[in-house]
Image (cartoon, rainbow, N blue to C red):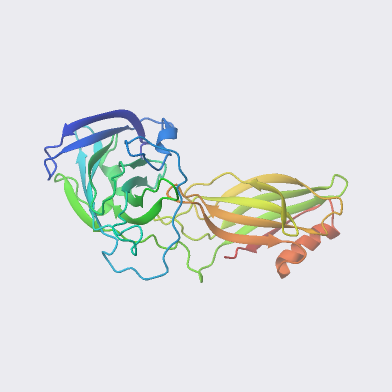
Length: 347
């Protein structure tokens, strides 16, 4: 699929072909190759009252443990359209309805909602609406255009709408999401209008689900007081994205008891459940050697919508589980040699 890149042209036009003949704000996105231009503006996840972006921390609000009835988070109203003459895919976000209050117990505490849209599987293609102040029924009427797309390419696209509530002084709150695959949408007959229930963001990994395995190689150089760690690959990682894949990377920490002495991380591997890293790292070991240290590994999924999620964890040291403790003992008893082992990741 062609890469899509946002331009900075903003204009108003009448979309007569849409089912709703309303004036919309049109934002265009080109299909040339390369990375997205002006990432500083696109990566800001909130707007100030005057419509310009302001700096704030955007993270997912803690998920509610209670069950949410269908429709309780409101509905999203949008239209998709394909212009074959211009090879342009258009998505118009009309409005959201019946959004929940930010604090259900507070009188009149409405949300300040906005919508982020991703074209999956390439999560980097992100656009968003403006923030609508103090309303549970925001009307946007904003159209986003994606150029240089052949009609057949639409079969591989999934629309991921994320509905957020802006908070100037704290974390923006995640209201919910809408996921729609264009594979089942007939865009050959003109614009298609849809109204979808907003659903809660589901936990990506069940507690009982396996977390996959990580292959690491360890070696100790006592003369240099160095510990060599090679992160080779992982396998059978759980599906973390709505596309059924993950964007994994590995963080590792050298621990002295409960104190972190050093940390490293691998490069990100996109859209895979069986990433191959083949990356080597060196850690300086304390004077007393390997006696009081251990390694912690965190395998994470990169998420551009909210904070990155931990897929699984691994501890290797003398007080770890049996297999991990044996791996550690191997490098203690056999310095200057590398030992590679598969280890199961835990929650």
